[in-house]
Amino acid sequence: GKELVYRVDYSRDGEIWTSIALDLRATELTVSTASFPEPGDYHFRVTAMNGLDSASATMGPIVIAQVKRLELPVRSLSFGTVPLGQVENRRLRIRGVGTGPVMILGPSFSNPLFSLDELLPVTVPAGAESTLVIAFDAKTAGTHSGTLRLESEDPDVGAVIITLDATVDASGSGGGTG
Image 1 (cartoon, rainbow, N blue to C red):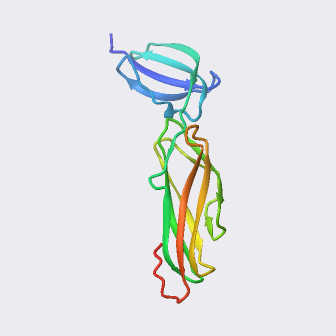
Image 2 (tube, one colour; image 1 turned 90 degrees about the horizontal axis):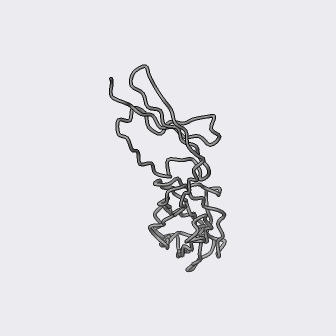
Image 3 (cartoon, rainbow, N blue to C red; image 1 turned 90 degrees about the vertical axis):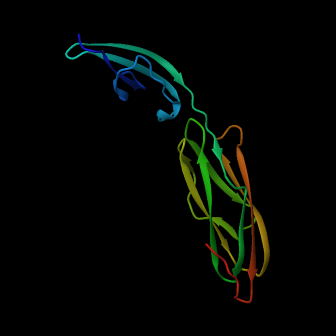
């Protein structure tokens, strides 16, 4: 007979199925938990086909756990020297380095001259990257510093603290770069 070809599907309810692999010729398949939309109970179905004949086996539920992890390449942002009355922006990259999506929750700033342009929460998928835009409003001359606290679903990190600093030049000759 013809060589067996396999299809592997998953389902949350055992009725609506989503394919993980089609036309698989190997008898084993490694699947990352990041392939699933969320953690929880999943059913699996393997169908073996050799032309017109096919047979299926269903198993489950199997608990799929996902690890929510985030990584920030930097823990401080400097806005440099900003002319009085200007708004300067910096980008903060956040990476999802776990096996499931991680949610970044509400920000809190220790200095009201710093703010976040995006609305939170933001979900960063596993293996992906998101960028937050942090703004500094140069309302008063002098040196300003503060912190940004971002809450997250990462069970090991929880809240992330980013230090912020800027100098406001009242003479109008500042050289901020966005």
